[in-house]
Image (cartoon, rainbow, N blue to C red; front, side, top):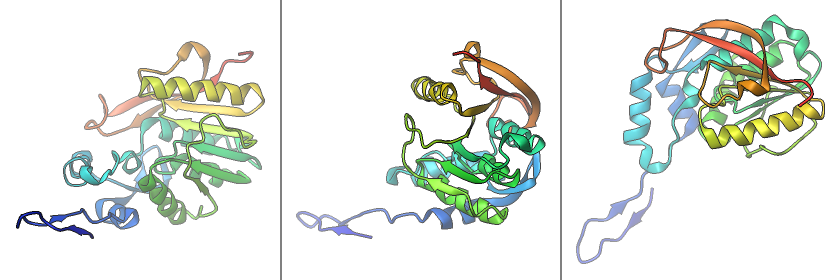
Length: 234
């Protein structure tokens, strides 16, 4: 904690204390089974509004991003379920879970037999959540990537991405990159519950799931969610 001397007798200005991500996650969440993937338990917010309000009101001034990591989003749940039910997708392969959030999909990939799993997320709170959740699920071998990796290629054999089509500019960047990876031979899988910026015309549906979600966050208690792959020949 730092202080700046006041001018002309005014009170000192106190800088906000840094927030420890792991401590914040442990205090604001509970270990709960994922509805569609109950064999995996994550540090999740029991109710959506309190943690959103706290991050916006109390911690917004220190730059705490929205807590996407505190929820099992529908796209990630469907993708994790699909990987666990079809382990041949990742077995023995080098896998990337992009925009990992809670780490759910990365954990599922490791449990399904992937040789090496990297979970990428630029949010330091998500990075802490991934580490906590991976350890909790005996998946501590998940490697966390903190950099923005869009546009890079580390030779991943399988690339997994859940719920990434909620913002126009980001979606355009991400899908162009995923298509480039797919064109050079990576096996790309996308989980999405019908977000606005999903380029459906460029994808092929592989499976569909009814995913239990919070009505506070979504428009229904069961979200129809699909697993997609880029169209062949693009």
